Image 1 (cartoon, helix red, strand yellow):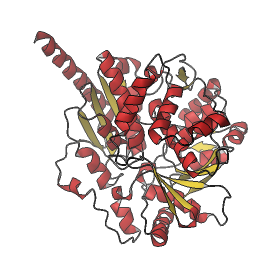
Image 2 (image 1 turned 45 degrees about the vertical axis):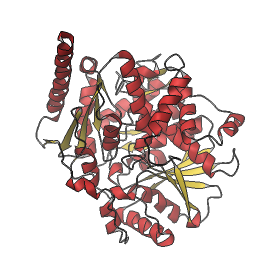
Image 3 (image 1 turned 135 degrees about the vertical axis):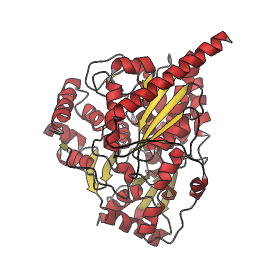
Image 4 (image 1 turned 120 degrees about the horizontal axis):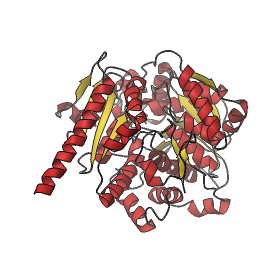
Length: 479
């Protein structure tokens, strides 16, 4: 298995090459040069495999034996997934009205990103220890990625992590989940801006090739292929637990922000998994417009919603979807993405849309009122509380007047405990206080104020980290 840039400048790269990277050198994203295909018999052989076993099966298909042996890979996956909070890892709650909730949030920060980042963190540490290498991870977050990334690497000897969070745009609980992680290798900035604005200085850092190389700079947002790769297992596990018979179609409703999760689902489908998906979004509807009618365009400012992890105006994984549904035509992807970057808009061609709609069959936009209504209805009918992101998908389910005729699952991307304000606004009489202890813990962070040079601040911090490492290395050699 080799990797390339979605825009064509680089090819023939190893998994390790793309794991330790951010954006590609031409501004694209790293993708497999080809996708493995599974037969029906192969799918049947996996049907009763555990979640860790499916993560291993997916990772093995995308990482060559020459890079990590099967014994090492399996041990790494098992050891990191053991850190999650339930033995099954993923649980499915079958509620009234054929509402099946696929709980992907049983990790240390109560978000689905824990599942992938626990394994990505393990892979990074494996290669770092093997090569005695140091890295700096640079992460922008809309709410959940930051804390999951921090939990996966804080305290690690060979890693520093710099996180930019949008102050006031994520919940207080989400912010505290980040700022209460205090370690020498953790550097957190509270930014006076939204998640798209804080991504700009991060992109500038990654587009400076010499800076990236000199400071061993990487990302573990869903820019990073490793994270998307692990998330493919979510879809296989959900499918096998929901289907009546392997081979029948299952529909999955996917809360969608930067589109990394639904990209993993599209790859699973391309590999032969019989699924269709519905992309469900909040009022920041660029993903819905792109996937329903090909209108990939930024319209105005991002709107703050009850589902903050989806408050995104530039979903970078659309580029990977273009790569998938142009049949890996890198030249075409490059032309489309360069037009988008120049004009803040591009029209996705009709033939690409036709191919895409065979997998993502529908989109749905939920307002804050829709979110509250869905949260309330789920609770009233089941005495079960969903988070506002999961409620976006549940709202689509409730909006359907007829049964789809195939098994359907809602991907629950976070626990409601992270969103006590949304639970209260939905008039659900349940206290979300399992994370209340964060209020009394010490915090550590630095401001990035509007009008300051955010790019300059980031570069200086990253340079300081590298200088500190070099000084420490000299001291060790002297000793």
